Image 1: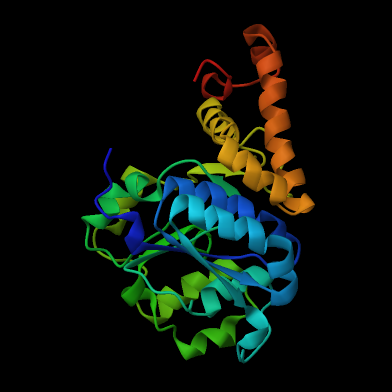
Image 2: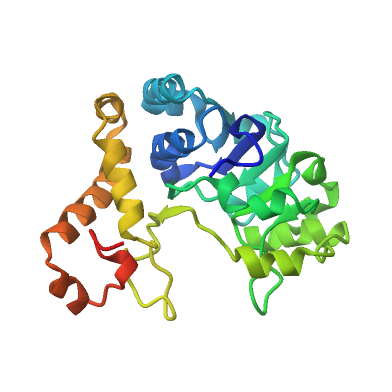
Length: 283
C-alpha cells in the first residue's frame, strides 16, 4: 500500500537521554528502513560520548537507508526550567530539523510498520494533529503525529507546566491553543485508535502480560518475523556488529524471544496464553 505522504516529508523526533541512548541505533535502523529518506532527530546528553558510542553505526544506517539523523544536545539549549521528566524535552524544545510532518514517539519502540500507511486517514483529514486523550485524564499519549507548522513554534507559557508528566505537557500545549477538540478528530480516533507500529521494548514492561492488567511489549509473529528478516541481511548484521554493546544487548532480548517462541509447538504456545496473532508461524 502506497503512503499518501512520502517518507522524505516526515521527521521522527524523540528523546534518547540517559539510559535510553542505548536505543538510538535500534530506533534509527528499523525506523529508517521502514521509512527510507525520512529525517530523525534525537535529544541526547553528552554529545561527544554519544558520537563515540553510536556515530559509526548511525552513519552506516544512514547510508543504507538514505535517511538523515541529527543528535540534538539538550545542554546547548537555554531552558527556563528543568522538567520533571527527561522525556518532556521532546514536547518543550522545537527540533532543529524541519519537515512537513513530525512524528514524536518513544525511542524504545522498534518500528516494524509504516507510520504513514497506518495513519492514511489522518493525512486527508486536514486536522493539525493525530493523538488520543487517555481516558479520565488530561494527557495525550506519547505517540504524536502532527503537521510541523501547526505544532511550532511552541507556546512560551508551556515552560510553566514542566513540573507535569510529559503527556500532560503535550495536552497543555493544545489546551493553551484551544485546539484539543478539533472537528472530525473523534471520528478519526474511532478509526485509527493508537497504533504502536512496532514492538515496545520498554524496560518498564514485561514482554508478555495480560493487557487489561499491565501493558506489555506488543509482541506478535508478524513483527518478530520482520525484525528477524531484517537482522538476517548481511549489511544489517555488519552494522549491528559495530553497535555499542548496550544496544546489542537490548536487541538480543527480541532475538531470544523469537527463537524461544519458535522452539515451542503450537500447543505449548497456547498453554502459556499466547493469542493467535502472537504465535510464530500462525500470524
